[in-house]
Length: 168
Image (cartoon, rainbow, N blue to C red; front, top):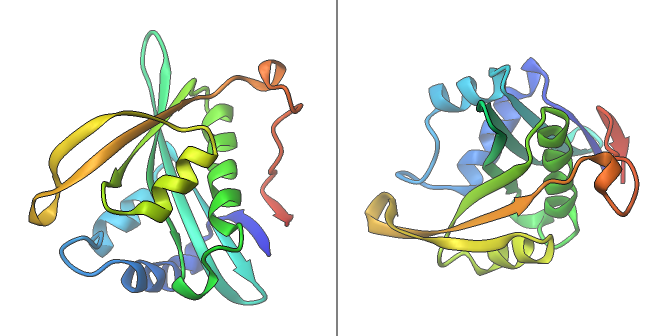
């Protein structure tokens, strides 16, 4: 599996994954997705095997006067490739991008009924922070998770990896 940052030519296969993973009204509109992948305050990671995209993930960050925080907009893996470690590697790369942007905390919303995603986040050190009722369409609740992002010198496992391109 090869992991790299998004390029403009990736939009159609990326959005095809969005369509495979989410049905309306849960699917991001194309215009919103284009804004996310082109934002200077975001990083979009792509996982590909050969020429086929297997997944992608988008993280955004906001610099505040006293701290910077990052928010995981989405992490998606095509159904046939789930359970192979792709989501975990995309998650790690989003964390590295957020850390490089100066974020000290990364957080997300996850559908309260998405047990697989909840297991993934918890396995990677995300801790529950609360619940938001009616967060998703059709009055579906979301769980809120967050994780502290120590900087490279504070990490026990050495400097952050995941340059722009690598294989795993």
